[in-house]
Length: 250
Image 1 (cartoon, rainbow, N blue to C red):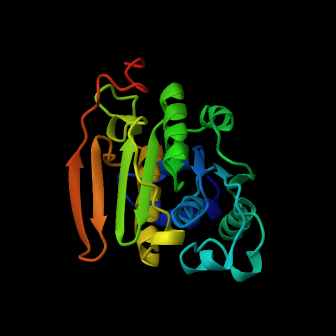
Image 2 (image 1 turned 120 degrees about the vertical axis):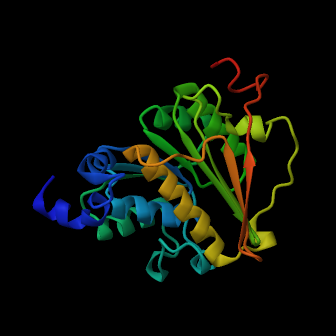
């Protein structure tokens, strides 16, 4: 670690739970972030500023004026441009040491199978169930920890699905793929701007803990936030032994 890096990351290094060894693990870490919207924005900024060595950002969409209310990684100058490229520029402006690979494509099963295999931690910042299940399936297949967040209106949730632990459920254990869920999008339902910042920042925190080895992850627990009352509720998540996605792994 260079003198500049020791100075940049000094506040992490001062933490007993991280220290130099933990910061070096962060610097060697590989994070895959799917979705550069409201959740992906704080994720990208915090992982980049914290010095995650390699980041892959996946998003097929472009920056729209309506995004700027909450997607803080983008600016007016980026309207009409690729979200993945916009986020890359923002991260590199904060921390040029981070190697950022933008992928301007829809996150389908083939792409995810390729990208997840090379990641140390995967962050699901997408906004639909089909993509979430595709990300989960790839994480289970390759044995990678998944940090999943969601936010709509004033309600948010976050959990870690880490099937490296035989007792930990996967996303499909909690939200079965054959169950019909109503798709709720902020374009029609609205979303409280700071809510995605709160959940996205928590996703970044869980990813950094997993990479550095600090603390205990949210694996096996679903944390739900009611932004109206600013009240958290925690739910324990058992693994479904008959889960169509992860049962074969165990």
